[in-house]
Image (cartoon, rainbow, N blue to C red; front, side, top):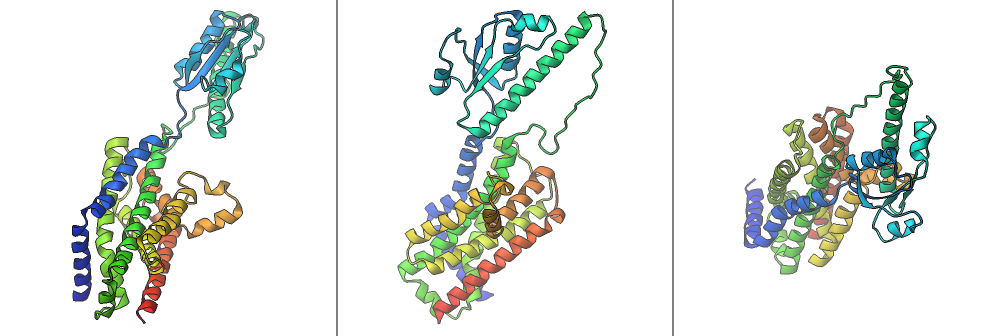
Length: 375
C-alpha cells in the first residue's frame, strides 16, 4: 500500500507541474458539453417555407397561418404564380414550398377534397422525413376542423368524433433531443479524456526516460498500474461532476435516478477507459502516436458505434456485432436510464456485465504488456 501511495503521489506532483493538462482534463469536457450540447440538436424547427398561394382566399390564408403558427415553419417567401420554385430550394431560401392551387377555397366550401402540393428539399433525408410528418399533421388538423364546420353548418349538430387520439410520451414529453444527447456526450467525453490522460502520461515517462526508474523500483506491475491510474480516476470523476452540473444549469437535464447507481456505472466505465489508455501506452513510443491511437480507439467508436447518434439496430449485422466491444454502448444505455428514466442498475445488469468484462479485459491486457516489457 505504501508503494502504491508513492506512485500515486508522484503522479499527482507530475500533474501539478503541468497545469495545462489538468485544465484539459477538467475544463475540456465541460467546454465540449456546452459546445456540442447547443450545436447538436435533432429538433426540427423554423423550417424555411415558401408559399405560392394561387387561390388568395380566406381558406388558403388560414392554411398558411396554421403552418406558420405551429413554429415548425417560418414564412420565407411568397412567390407569384409562374415563379421558379426549384430555385428557392436550390439557393437555400426555403426548404419547403407549399403550393395552393386556384379553387382551393371553393372546393372546401362545396364539401369536396381540395388538393395542395408540398415541394420539399430532400437532400437531408432525416429532416425531410420530419418535415413531411409535421406537414401531414397540420393538414390533418385543418381537415378535421373543416369537417366539423361543415357538419355544424349543415345542421348536423356537433360531429361524432369516433376515435379520440390522445398520445402521451413518457420520460421526455417535450421530445427534446437535448435530453437524449447530453448523457451521450458525457459518455463520449469521459472516454476520450480518460484514455488520453493515461496514454499520454505513461508515454511521457518513456520519452523522458523516467519509466526505467519505475521499472527498476520494487513495484509489482499491478501497483504501478494502480498508482498511475488512481489520480486520473479521481480527476475523471471530478470531470463527470462538472459535466452533470453544466448539464443541469445549461440544459435543465437532471439526474432522476440513483446517484449511487450512476457512480457505480461511471466507476466501471472509467476503469475500463483508463485500462485502455494504459494498453495504448504500452504499444506507443511517442506522445503523438499515443494521441492518434487514443482518438482512433476511443472517440470514433464512442461517437459512431455506441448508439450516441446512430441507432445500433439500423446498422448492418457486422457493425452490430462490433458494437459489443464498445464500452460506450453499455454505458450510454445505463446513463440514459438513470438520468432520464430514473432507473437503477436493476434493469441494466447485462450492460453492467459488459462494462465489467471490458474493464477486466483492458486491465488484464495492459498488465500482461507491462509485465512483458519489464522482463
